Every structure is written in structure tokens, then in C-alpha cells.
Image 1 (cartoon, rainbow, N blue to C red):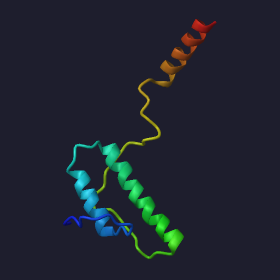
Image 2: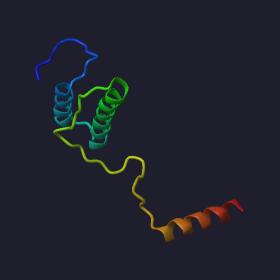
Image 3: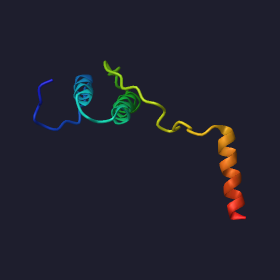
Image 4: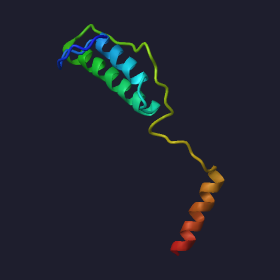
Length: 92
């Protein structure tokens, strides 16, 4: 998409697709790109809800991401229990 050389409050699906395409060509992490994509999806959902907008957006590109809120556990449950026990002994 050619730059419009101006700011806009009326973000369209074309704008969103162009931004996702631009993000795909940057050095940003997948996690960052995924968060940006979720933000745009939330914007369109909010517009539908708040303004009864019929405009929907489904991204043409998808930035996969592991759950951002549940980082991977690097210790097993047994190892975590042993660390917990050792910490309690040190306190005690």
C-alpha cells in the first residue's frame, strides 16, 4: 500500500493488512508482531460493538506466538517442589 503521508482515525482493513505486511518485513520478534495483530483485531471488534460497524478484519498474515501469559516451564513439577523445599529450608 502506498503511504498516504497523513494520520488517520479511520483505519480500514486495507490499512491493517498493509501494516501486517510491513511488520512481517521487520526485525521485530514474532511475539511483538503477534501483539500488534491482536491489537488491531481488538480495535475492529470494538468498532463493531461500539459503533455497530459492519467492517470486519481477518488478517491475511498470521504471527504465531506461544502463549504470552504462560511462559514455558523449564523445570518439572518434581524439580519445582525440590526448589521450593530448599528455599523454605534456607528461610528457616
